[in-house]
Image (tube, rainbow, N blue to C red; front, side, top):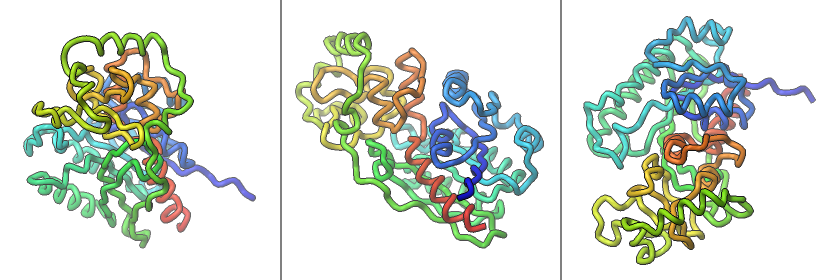
Length: 330
C-alpha cells in the first residue's frame, strides 16, 4: 500500500506549538510557523526544531516571503492555520470592542487571501459569540467568506476529543469555493477523561511539588482550600472573581486552564488532595501534551504558554477531519 503524502500547513500566531503538534500527529507537515512572543518562540524551537519559524510580527511578513520560504505557489498550500490573540473576546477579560487585539485577524485574512490555501482553520475562544462581541464574530465571518471560502464556525469542547479539560473553543473551518466542498467539523471522538485517569502513572518533580506545597502553607487563597469541595471554585465562598480558582474534582475533566494559573494566586487550579497548585507536568497532561514536551524551567512562563495554547488532540481531530473530508476528496 502506497504511503500517503503528508498534507502541508502554515501556522500563524503559533504560540508554543500546540496546534503544530496536533497537525503533525494528524499526518501534516508544518512548513512555516509565525510567532512574535520571545518565550513562545523559544518553546516552539525546543519542540519543533525542524520547522521553519518566522520570529516576528505577523504584519511584517509578506505573502511573497511565505511563498518563498515554503516553496509553494498561491493555491498549493493545504491548510492555513491561525489563532489570533483572544484576550479581547475572552469571558475572563474586560471584553472591550475597541481592543486592538480584536483586529489582528485582519493580518490573518491578508495572508489567507494571498496564499489561497485549499482549507483554513482559525481558532478563538467561545466567548466571542456572547453579547456585543457577536458583532466582531459576524465581521470575522463576513471577511472570511469574502476571501473566497465556504465557512463553518462551531464551538468545540476539547473534552470531547481526548483532552482531560473542559475547554470551549470556537473553530472556524473554511474550504476554498472552487473546490465545491462544504466545510464541517469533527464529531466527538472520546468520552470525557477524568483528571485522576489522565494523571495516572505520572512521575512528578519532587522539588517542584515541595515548592508548591510550601507556597500552599502561606496565607491567601490556599487557606480557603479546605473549605472548597472538589470541583468548586472560590466564588462559591463569596470571593469576587474567584471562579477561575478551582479545587479539582479527580473524577471529572479539569476546567479551562488559563494563563493566570501560573501566578500561584487567583486563577489557579488546586490539587484535590494536597494544598497546592498543579505542577507543570500535571497541567501538560491535562492539556493533552506528551510528557516530554519541553516548556522550559520557569513555572509561571510555562503555565502561561499552556493556558494560551490549543490542546494538541483537539487540533489533531480537526486536522484529521479536514484531511478526510476535504484533502482526500480532491
